Length: 367
Image (cartoon, rainbow, N blue to C red; front, side):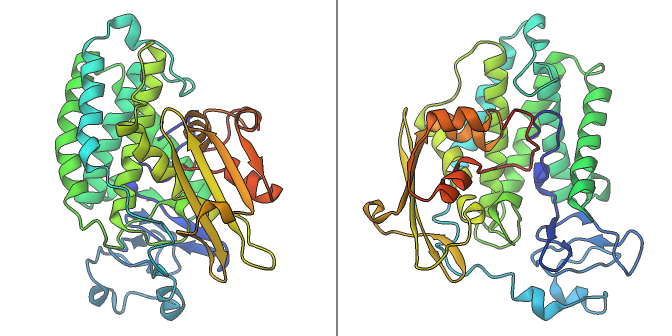
């Protein structure tokens, strides 16, 4: 999603991440452009691997990459595997609601008059019309870049700053060009049309294949199901912003909102601080209008979701569903989430939970 006109790196599913330990970009997904040592504009299309591979032509298998200036293959290949299912917890299945969410938005847009289309949204500086045009762009970039491998939809990810700046520029250019041209009716019709092929592409991939990357979920590659769930959260959050702008109730019932908080929670292992000394257990709960809870344990390889009862937790954080998802996409600041939360235990761990960021977005509200 985009919030405050600061690009979200995983928008459309194309992003790279800085491997700070190695001091260079480590490609965890696909379809990003890297200024590699082999050529000025070497294209990385990792298609199922997370190996740092600068090369000129897209390859669909490891064999096709041989001789393409592969560097430090052994080191990076070891980073590709998820230790076990506990790292990300159970898969979040959004297939039952992915289409329904878009259909609900299309119905809402069909009811709006001209003034409502011009209403400002909680996504700063964007109106309902502009935010809807942005959603169309997300779908088209996903299809062009991810499904079709069209390099024009890719983004320079040689650094995080370039990635954010590149996405920000692409999004701004699209919105500025299309909003004066596309009527609200045509925008709605395009959004309705683009949903079909986009969902067909997303749901047509093997959900368990490690072919995707979601920046806020830690080192990848990640299973495709997480990328699809992330896509759903982007759509859902933007629809909430549109509904708030026009004074309509949000899709906050458990059927639509539970997959969002479940997906955002998958970022917890990546943000919790290294445990000092003995193993620690952390329990995180969200409450009202429905409840969800997660228990995480620390270990030699980091934090993981565990099945241990939360009664054994040394740190407990509880907050409302609304505060949890809004803070994760930086629609509320740190003070607001602190006021809403109840916590007990390690202060550093509590801080990390309250600072969970389920999108690469800069803070636009006071911390």
